[in-house]
Amino acid sequence: MTTATDTPARHAAVRKVRLRGERSPLASVALHLTLIVASVVAVFPVLWVLLTSLKPAKYATTTDFFRETTLVNYTNLIRDTEFLNWFANSVIISALSTVIGVFVAATTGYAVSRFRFPGKRGLMWTLLITQMFPVAVLIVPIYNIMSTLGLLNQPTGLVITYLTISVPFCAWMMKGFFDTIPREIDESGEVDGLTPFGTFFRLILPLAKPGLAVTAFYSFITAWGEVAYASAFLVGDENLTLAGGLQKFVNQYGAQWGPMTAASVLIAIPAALVFLFAQKHLVTGMSAGAVKG
Image 1 (cartoon, helix red, strand yellow):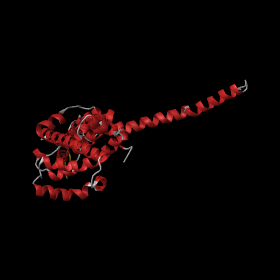
Image 2 (cartoon, rainbow, N blue to C red):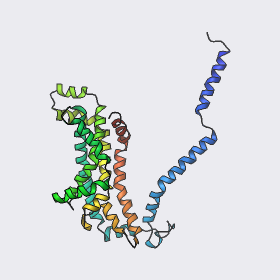
Image 3 (cartoon, helix red, strand yellow):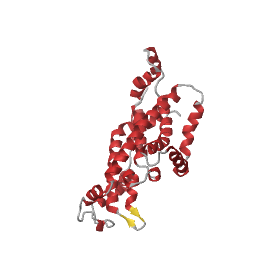
Image 4 (cartoon, one colour):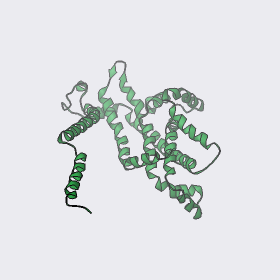
């Protein structure tokens, strides 16, 4: 039985446990200051680029951010350069890389997750090993392959190249995501008379939206911001992508900070929109894909 003397002691113990979970005023201030400093560090480069893009050339390297604010850098960028062509090329290449990459990665991940076939273990090792090679090692052999196939200076060649980067990682991730979906769903599709393709497209894909969102985001960002392959495989101002076009503003004599920062701001907008569209699925998809390997 609980005595009268046990009750105050129990309440005191509960208060001690609660107090242990509470921060002191000094710790709370330190935490908030740390968060503020981290936020400033994260936002400052982006804000600097944005404000620099709104300054005339004579103030480009100064801290006079709100002096003679103008949009001339944006108007000159669109009027005097091939920026719109670069933008269109990047949109086409990124869209194709995303759509094809999502399809190939999803079907590959599902096949590896659900079926047994000769070479399955070798395929899984290949998906892992291909991620270990840096761009500097692969750019020469891929360049030679594209040259032999006549795909240099063609969007198709760049799309294929980006697929070699994104698909192995995304297929492995999708495999882990499909492992978390119960196999009973596939069996129910078979009972209803669906083919494996029908089961995949009608039953499994609707449940795999978070994983597909991560795959789409990764494929898009890989193609949208890549520089090395785009610079090596494409020539001619009208054929460049945005990443390659930015290099036109830098030479051995200096940099054109106004147009370059304006282009950087415009380049970041589509990436930000894609992120906002996919963000609600990103955490779920990445965590689910990491549950099983």
